[in-house]
Length: 340
Image (cartoon, rainbow, N blue to C red; front, side):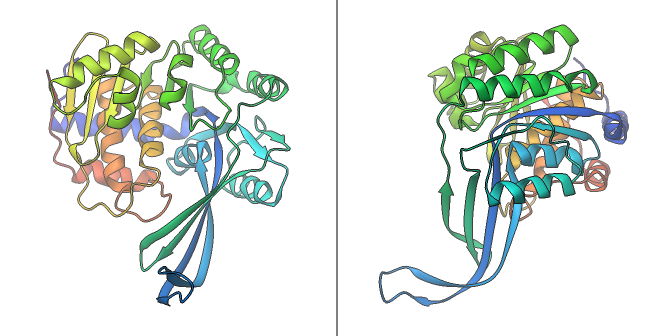
């Protein structure tokens, strides 16, 4: 695909972003609650050589698949969220946050398993420690059946499917088979933010979005050099049927492999990096919206790269809003990705 010139590309990207409000996306995956405890380090503990944090505030944010849904909503799209939440106080907080953000939660399933909670202690803008409370065993057949039943009722109003896999038990062979079938049947883009442990489950994908470490684990190949990326992407595509492999590379930007064999290198747009928490969620959200809005795969990846450059400049599980993204498009010096 030939990319448009700078003014044409800005116009196409901006038009796509403007159309996000007409789109509905189904997000399936591992739902989490992110807790941030904010404070100041006042002294070193006499009990052990660790800092004592004087807590000043705490906030709860949507995490995991719920953060993907929140990214979609912040960008103006409608989001339907499917996954597991516990019958506990943290589950209530998560549901309340989702509903406050106008995320459709009717495809969620409540279970006796506790809500996944990730607590980050932050002092003077630096994360001191993270505490995880979770159970990551595979969901029961009854829970998977309930998830499939709930998703069946909302897929007819969705234009795209995102699988946000954190290997906490939601993505199973049965759920993946159902989603692949429905995506093919409805002509819907199907995207996965993967976990290497579930590599063998993924089938019939439009785009898969591993980072470099995940790409190495899934392919069994080294990713140290630019020339390695094509072989790595081809191996991943062969194993998943993906038409596109988007490898996120941190400060080195992104690399997009397409089924025609071309690899596009997309340099990072980030000016300053404060926190990479949730950046992968932003990437897959924007790629999905771009494809659903009619952009080509390379254009959608380019748009996601601009969005990622914004979100890593924020602290916490952040999202990008539509106005920020539109402004960043206009301010960016767009460089056409080079194919190798």
